[in-house]
Length: 228
Image (tube, rainbow, N blue to C red; front, side, top):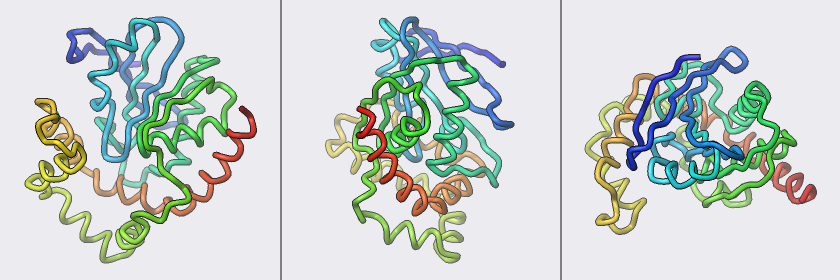
């Protein structure tokens, strides 16, 4: 296990760790003490997105903020399966390897869907807080996903993503709604992680499993509801 130190926005020091799970590298930041809480980022994001939350949560919890394979600062090989189901499987193995018998999960968007799949797979998930998780009954964005899953769309994404830096601010402003609320460093944080080498392939490998993931997510939601 490789460990170095990183400071959060509050000055709190956290441990950046790498652990091998099923032959693949998984990155996470760990800090604090107490019951474990797992932070799962959204699509195209990473543990960087939780930088303002870690300090508060770590006062009562052992916080683990992940960079899932293919995202954040986790430079997964191009062939890596980055689907939601694959990520949930990795997390189930991570909890077992770290001997975490009970965890709370906070998941955002795509990470919220991964959390649901994990909860359906593992009895180690105690509770979940989900912020705008993927809705498996919504068709919003399905056309774009089908386009990028095609040969033309895939080629376009691989060509355009490395040169996409000029449009990142516009995309970020749409996400926040009010541009004045975007914290300093946010644009640079997202851009540096989105433009990492091989990232377009990671994104495409996520989208290729989307329809299968959505079907699995519908089943997982029912399983989780039935167990509560």
